[in-house]
Length: 417
Image 1 (cartoon, rainbow, N blue to C red):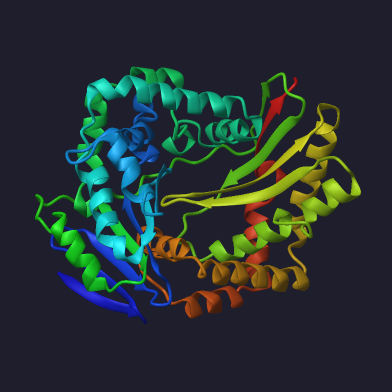
Image 2: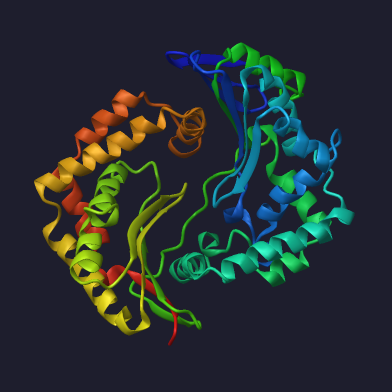
């Protein structure tokens, strides 16, 4: 095993079986945050098995070799801790927040979920119904559903456009052997990253993981490589009729993966464009024109690509006017770029968000995992802040000219036709 010190109180160990373990010691806390990230999620699914990663994430909580579903629920909760999991595009994550003294218990519990689930056929039907209820909840929430429909329109046949939850048909067709196959294909040490932050020593974390069998040498298996990405659809407009009180509209386009050096330039642009009350879209569409209550911009970075866009909810009678106003702001930003004041404000906002996140051990844990999974290396916060400070108006102008022309945007409108 190779262990290196990355920063003050921060260590990275690489095991012979390929597992990566990262930790940051925060001695002023009385807690510990622990997470296991699996490089297996919705992007790795064939269309016919859409939703299998998310259903697998649910099913591991139904019982393991050591614990019943009820014992899993009680293990940390009765000690004041919490246990959570989520499925994304590139990764599935299992996380615990506990008292520092309960770190070994958290390692034991998450190891049970990740490496020792039963995945019994008799548990599948009830959990399938739970997931279908989750799908129904999205369908009844138009400001959630519109994003799923937009991703599908943008990415078309690529898995980045698939629903993470799956569909009623795909989830309804999944069998216990599909879950077992997905688990065997992705849930092995070389395909996992463990990250933790809190009041404990790195050696104590390694000792707890060794006790749970993480050091055992599996057969040599490579880490899953990032997916190839097909070109996204540009300039597509699609109407999805729904009997809703509002029209829900999402504009968006593909960008670049998180390792791209332009990511801070686009983060600053996103903030200036629609990141808050002072942003261009809020001031123009809500304050000046009174066309919407909710309007904002967003960005997502994945391993192989990125996505950015704008959401607005507006009355059906004003949907065309809102869309025209947003298109005009897209084109103004693409042609003129940011002002010097917007650039400096954007830098301050981005740096403030990053620094404030350091107050939370869960955020620190997530930062360690993201550095490994998305960037492939850890960088001290001072280096990141310096990179943000180095972004120039020319940098943001080049990104705006490429990604912000209105004709590039794919638009999905959900609401009355």
